[in-house]
Image 1 (cartoon, rainbow, N blue to C red):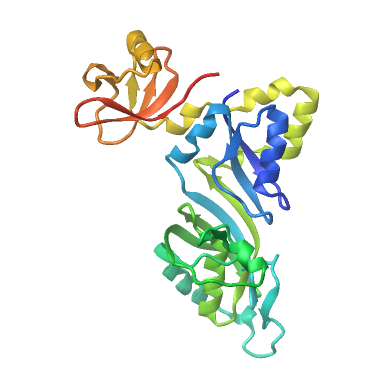
Image 2: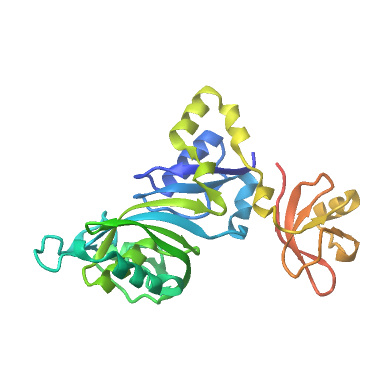
Length: 305
């Protein structure tokens, strides 16, 4: 049982909760995901099953897209509504946040588009001196964090009114959406907090690829074999990679760990990057690159069970 199934993670579930459920439904412990979602977040969560777990670190498309709701005038220690309120100016009768003009918000958003630096929030899984930041924060501590470079490909204000709005964000892996909202709020002078988050795209998968967790449970109870049909093959992740096609003899040599001469392999095209290596039955068996000595250097193998 190998492949990828995209699950819609519900609000209130941790990513590990979904993994635990999918392990039971799929009947295997060999399951992983390619990007954690906080419990309050929902949306696209690609699940890798069996030998597909070996592909997690090699996904060619690591960008994410989100739809995030926010409220101006409030800040919390977690930068979202699940945290403890640290400031609230929404009840002021003067200089009210609800009057922060749309044009001003859009002007500030331009600063957070492109390559930017973010300071990871204390309530995050980032490690400092071997300790998770959220473990330190839960004990009331705070440590200095090193800014990290991330890329925001696009940032759009989809809706806004009365101090509340919705952002559409396309960004690189590792971007904290709640921190973008928090920082915009600081620029406005009122503060801001994320009130909801939906991931709409991850690793090339979108909402239309997702399966409802409750429906998957129902399928398991009524027709468990149907779950296998929902798995997408691993090679679908690397469909845009040039192929290195092995013949029967080369396939046997590959499986026996013999180094292969790239000059004798049939390539779709020659490039300086990574190839999807297929066996004599056109199945993905590895990711590889060509070395200077013209040998095929294996980056990751994909075995069959």
